[in-house]
Image (cartoon, rainbow, N blue to C red; front, side, top):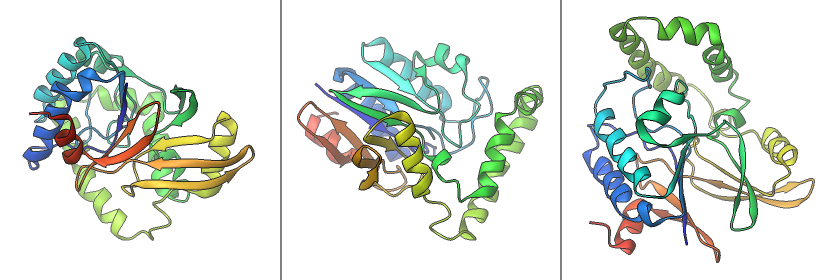
Length: 249
């Protein structure tokens, strides 16, 4: 019995090895898992809508659909690069689109799932951008634009975001401890799983209900840690090592 959590894949043709790993995961161990949760940032490029044809979207969505059809409960929530995911994505892949905050039970442990960007409240510039993209008027206007223009605008955000990140202090783009405790206390949980910060690891923190645990998933630019949960334990393991353990070919 396993539940798998992954985030920040940033899949692109420039990293074919990571594409193959995702394919191996979906064709092998993911199909044998009880459930799979992808906590945002599936692609390197910003998702421009349900007509997005940016490679490798077509092949990845086809693999996701085949995996969901094979039996496991597959879920995805939005990251900062896929804020425009909606019910159309669910229809195309069979993966259930989750709200930005959701509490689930992992073998008896109530756990809060988030992408992680909403925890980085010290990054005020990003939070303004996020609220703008959440506006129904802005979303509607953007999605009404011709596909080519949407692609040019969204893909142009990538270098701008990279440039912005280089000018920000590390603590600005990490989660805010006060916000994190408030989210966990409000949800009534002792465990939180998220991605976004690209700083994999498990961190203890003091909550109103006692000591809590925050597990951060790794990005697939590097080792690409995946969280594997069983009734006995939770463990962060590099995707390549996990595929080797499971014999995925």
